[in-house]
Structure formats: C-alpha cells, structure tokens
Length: 416
Ligand SMILES: [Zn+2]
Image (cartoon, rainbow, N blue to C red; front, side, top):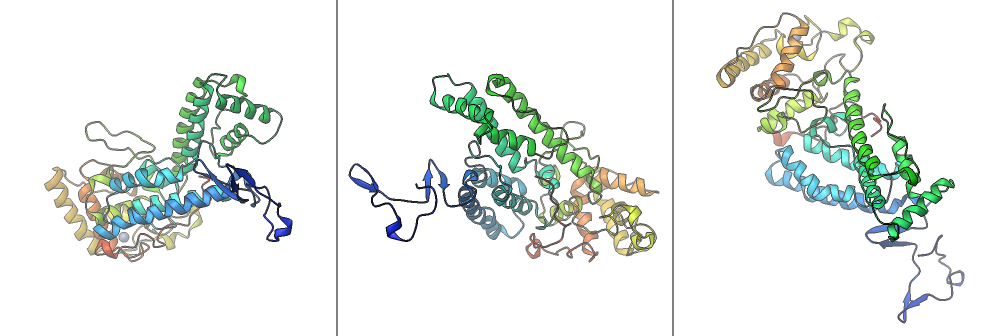
C-alpha cells in the first residue's frame, strides 16, 4: 500500500512494482489486513474510516437479513424482543464491535456510523420510533452503549497484553506504544486514554497510567468502574427527562424475589406481555412516545390551561390522570375491564385514587408488577387507541404499526 493518492498519470507512478516469488505486488491505496481495512488517501487515516464504513455496511446488511427478515416472516412488529436481542448478539454485534480492541473510537464521525445503526436496531427491537430518546434504549433492553462495549474490549485486550512475557512481540509493541505516548506522539495507549476521558460520565474513569504502573488488577477494576459509570449515566439521564416520568424511581419486579431498583436490564414486560400490540403500547408509554400535554417540558414553562386533559378538561393531562382518573366514558369502560381482569387473573382489587400522586403511584404499581402488568398492558392499548393525540393513532392490528414512525421525542445528543 502506498501513502498518498495514486496518480492516474502512468508517468507519475513508480516505474515498477515490488515482486514476491516472481509476481508483481500491485500499488493500492487501501488494503485489508487481518480483517481490518487500511487506507492512505483519506484525511483521517489513523481512524480507519474505511473500516467503519465497511463494518456499517456489513451490519446493515445482516440487520435487514435477520431481524427485518424475521419481521417479514412472522408479521411486522411481532418478533419478541428476546428473540430480537438473540439475533442482535448473534449476527449484528460481531460487526459493530469488530476490531474494537485495536481501533479506538477517537473520531466521532466514524464511530457515529456504527452508533447510529446500533440505535436503529435497538429501536426496532423495542418497537419505538426512529426519533425516540436514547438512554431508555439501554435501560429497557439492558444493552450497554456501543462505545462503552468497544472500549471494554480494548481494555480487555490491554489486560491480555500486560500479562504477556516481556519477550512476546505483542508485549514489545505495547512497550513501544507506551514510549510513543510518553513522548507525546499518537499511539494506541494514547487513544485508549483519550476515549476514556471523552465519555460523558459525571464520575470520570481513572486516568490511564504509564505502562510501569499498569497491572491486570488495574484493568479489572477499571472495567468494573466503566460498567458502573455507564449504569449511573443511564439512570441520571432518565431521571433528568420530564418525558419519562413513569421510569423515575422505578423498581424492577422479579419472579421470586421482592422488587428492587435495577438501572439496566431486560425488563419484565418485554417477555411477560406476549401479545405484541399490548407490549408495543406499554413500551411506548414508558419510553415517552405518547405526547401528553405539557409533559415534554417542565410544568412551570407551560400555561396551566393548555395542560388540561383533552378528554374531560378537569385536570392536568398526565399519565396518572389519563389512565387512572379520567372521567371520559371510554376510559371508564376500559378501567372497568381492567378491574375485572385484575380480579380474575391476579385476585387483586383495583383501588380508587383520590389524588394525582396516588393515581401516578397506582399506575406505576400496576406496570411494575410481575403479574398485573399483563392486563395493564391491554388496558394501556385500549385507552391509547381512543387518544389520537398520542403521537400516531395506536393500531388495531400490529401489522399496521410502523415502528419507524416519528412518534417520539426529538432525538437528543445524549453523548453515547
Ligand atoms: Zn381527563
């Protein structure tokens, strides 16, 4: 491979090629070595942009062939999230993280190619619109952000290199990388340090020390810190968003243990609610895809009159009122159906709620319950279908649903 563009003028090219075993080695400006593409004609040669482009193309192709192909087979939107995640880890993730141990995400333009695709896949698995928010994708599916996973692979590779004997070639390369970093030149260790510093965590990761102070224990501890900091970031981002009130302070129900706060995991409703229409309605309610009046802004910034319920006009249009207190005949009928369902299925009597806080708390209790979530998800769909203001009108059949619809909040640059 040559450095710099190859001139189209034959007179300006080298007169001959290098030969190996009698055969010419052609001049090329990009080359694939051990599965990684190198190029010398793009500005950011060190970020290996062409490798990101190739892997984004491969992951997109597999995405269309696997998850979207299954959607066509079983019906649009009917693929259970558990199966969707299995396909994601089996055939897509390997492309998204390919070469992550060597190629660090130091260039946002390149890494965004993979990041954008990763978010699109996660939204499709959840059944959310293409502009829905970002942190809820990670909190609901229990998938770590792509940049975090790619950095973790690099740290694990660093751990492996440190444990090698001094005479090993890869260990010698690490020593050279450390020398370059100490002299202020570009290096692999310098890239790791840059990526660790650039993550948007409130509690920063430890500073990468020089090779003399690096150890296997340091790597293990840093990987743990990386995971904890990611969970803290996801949790704090969700707490900071007024559009996700039902996720604030949630406690995850478990089958045989008392509920407890879990910042990231594959949520119970994704497999407990087996009817796709019901699951979609509940997922979109929790993930902020329903447009309640004034709920996407702090209450103090909205005129009180413009926050009133569009069905009954008696109280603020917030989730607790719309589902548990609204006196519109459609909602009352749906609530009666829920009352019968809870009594029959869970032997639970639905209490009446006298205040907004009680109504909100009751709705959270119903959703974040191992058994009660099943009739509650049906109830959410029935109520939502009568509200054309909730973004797109909820479909009567899931095959009419369009997970790519722009029914969510504006995507914000959440930093991961
Ligand atoms: Zn109302």
